[in-house]
Image (cartoon, rainbow over all chains, first blue to last red; front, top):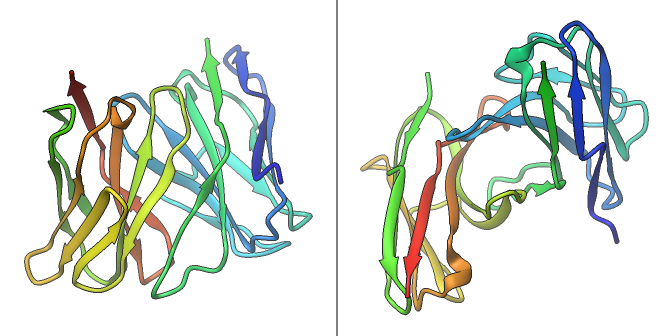
Length: 115
Length: 110
């Protein structure tokens, strides 16, 4: 099993350009998440999905859009990139969070620089 | 709002024991998680405490006290490969989101 994969691994954009980050998981997880991680900080949730066809906003959703057309894929879009979106982006997936157990599985990350 | 506080850096010696603390100000959460992240890598799950008390997994243990708004991760028999950042995170009961601390960088010296 590949687990959680992300493409691309690295990307450099100019201000105003758009791009889509792709996340795929082969563990049949219902929940999928997009986080960003800035230097010296923890992860902040951008958007998440609780199942195919559903999406919801996290802590820092502005400037991003997402789609979950298939259960195994979760796409993150930047319509007009800004330097403030320079970050490392992680995708994660999990089974439905339970009261007794909760584990998220992470992809390797995408390092995005916006000039 | 919710916030979690961790020391930014902890230094320990190989073979020793180290405790990484996490204090939180949040209401209504299901449990406290710990994740490890090596430089340039992705976070990986270590433990989850749904109930107060100690959870042990090999060399790692995690503790939660809801009455004290406090938890910790205990690493025993430290190895050089344990050099990494460690994050605590709470699972909110309002929306099942994880809220993360800023992380603790663990430096291990020979």
